[in-house]
Image 1 (cartoon, protein in one colour):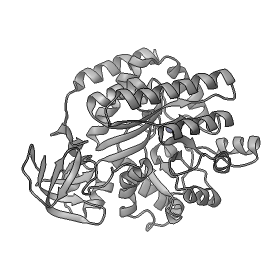
Image 2 (cartoon, rainbow, N blue to C red):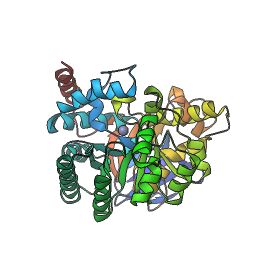
Image 3 (cartoon, rainbow, N blue to C red):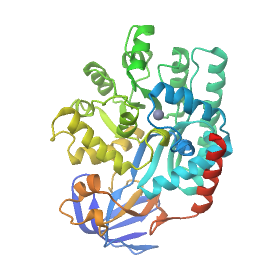
Image 4 (cartoon, rainbow, N blue to C red):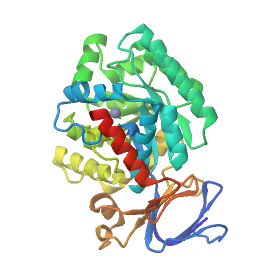
Length: 419
Ligand SMILES: [Zn+2]
């Protein structure tokens, strides 16, 4: 495939102008050459970007869009979300996930990192639509031995299933929920499972003040120290939120080459706090971005997440020079590739061809004084999405799925759930 004469190409080093990209065998073969084998896409009106990577999601929660706003975290969870989750099944999660993938692809996401339930059904939806995914069964035991065994068994089954019966775009992860509701035994065995599959270990980390307090009270140490002492921290560790981290916590995570996923919209909506992202980056801690589930966001638009990342750091630090454009852009793609140890997130030769084409003629992209500034702050319109070298969306239309049917099915399921 040839992306011909792209007006701009966002590479790690600089923004290239009027270059062509050759995609062959799932990967970016070359930048700057014009091999016309296969499909040719005229990219002269587009900026070619690495596909965005949403590093913390619960995609099936698209079913819960708008069910609860203006609630405090604990009552939001206990009174609204948990009762709805009780009613979920594989079919419902399949449609919720499919709905999420259409939304993600339309807003430039080409890869997601998810923890939830009925994950083989979520993987089935991901495989059908063609998005890249990292998926794990969300585990919690609250100290209950029977529940622990059940959760580990399901996590192990899902990981096997995903490794064996799906395409190479679908990857297993191991996902204990958090230190707050997972016992030491569960966390240790989750790490063993992650090691067995050479998979990322993805969990919530220091999301709320309450979580930190509870772990401190029970273990006499903060969540990061607790995880370090258990041996869970390394380059495979992906901690979502990291809102309540001390300087020492950040130093530990950075020293272990771990990753923190920043979710500014969810953190603001649930008033969880402001994650010290600027301090993390100063200490060379890898930071990527996520939306969290739609119930606490309420969308999956990573461009918005980039904007809020920049705005929140600037405002909270009273420093408009913090979180500069280059750093924001890296958190949306490149840093995720590092976290997942996969060649994604960069427009670079040899990298997997997960690419998006942003219309530079849209109202939000003009006048174009700075490509990165417009992308982060002004609203980008994604027209084409290529994942694993395959075109999954062209002219704003996601291929191979019936969008009307997906919306209708999700409407039906959602009203059934809330009734
Ligand atoms: Zn979450």
